[in-house]
Length: 314
Image (cartoon, helix red, strand yellow):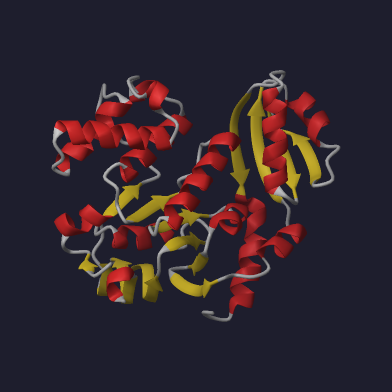
């Protein structure tokens, strides 16, 4: 069984006197497991421990029977997509992926084939030979995702992988995650956007102040979000016109212009329906959307509800 699990055995990580995570015991099975919690809760620390980028102060971590202090064996099984941009100067998308496949030991022909497959899965084939420096934020996010899946890992560790993606690509990426999960992969996804977690996850690990406070199927997320609508900031060419088009929807409870008049704050009780509506508005070609960013200020009440009602593991 241990060869099919990611196992944290009484793991603690301290940065000097600062707590990263404390006394974590987890056994993660195949499928999509989301690490959920406010910024600074310890999600990235858990991911860096899984990848071997950090060593635990106490305890042990193993992935499918491989200890995290065996990097060569570990990264034959693991794909890691960080949330941070870091690309060699002047590289194209295809060159970026091929360079990592070469490090994995693949010959040129195999590397080209694997790169092509990865680029296709993230819908970047048409832009594969452009310089990464010319990519949009969403395209850079997708090329990092392609790099993390190109060597066909069995464990994928994805830190905020949906950040910067437009609604259509976000939906396609979530569908890709579900497909990979059905193929038997482990996907560990960090997110603080609860509606995305609710849609795609098999299992949730709730982290707060360095502690795992609940794990399993967290019930009542949708009901709680009805009480605390999700806020989204959209920057676009005509915020006032967008406000008029979306405010008539029963799931939109507020539409407010940003102070600089170039953005629109939306509060919605059903983020999935809102994103579908936004796709329809963009498809009409009358409004150009520049960025879409969930604003998590209003989500603190949801976290407090989940933390307070969890009571422990399920």
